[in-house]
Length: 266
Image (cartoon, rainbow, N blue to C red; front, side, top):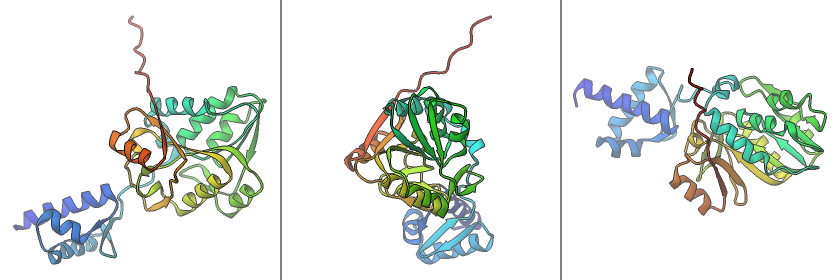
């Protein structure tokens, strides 16, 4: 292959590592029709250029999916998140004690719960705290801990210790991505550990994620997605992924996203 062809292949390898998170030498060799030795040389070159980090048997993009801040994510899929939040709020009953994760979609749920009566809400997220701090009919508990500025959520041993003192009727979790095979994806292992602990303290577990997050594997920290949990997403979700999740006994609720409102004509 010409030098230009080698560079094109390396660019494609980098794209694959960026979009899938991890690619093996064997898979790349088969995909590009070259030997494993050629792929290893490509990976060595990309590593030397600072574009990849070598892993056992393959490579990971160094800047594959930089974690976006909560502020950046709030405007993404805004209408879908609102529809998901409204559907999730319909699950909550008066007098219950619920636990809210950090994240923009769960933050939208907190906004929907402003009209709730006789509700106790515990949360690890600053957005939920801000949404509910002035609502007299909602009793709010902050679990505290170490603040992650990007996610605007609390993590760590203090958060985990606070969890041990409460139980919940329902917990609503956010996520950066969902894989039927791997579960819930997050940027930080502390987040995935915390989600698992939160789920253990609740009778009903819900994951809130808009359709674009289904099938995404942006990071390498995972929490399991057990049978019996409920995913609330929107109707644009990939039908094959929905079917696979349902095949694993995950209840999937699809919400309809209303079309954007047209401004009145002048």
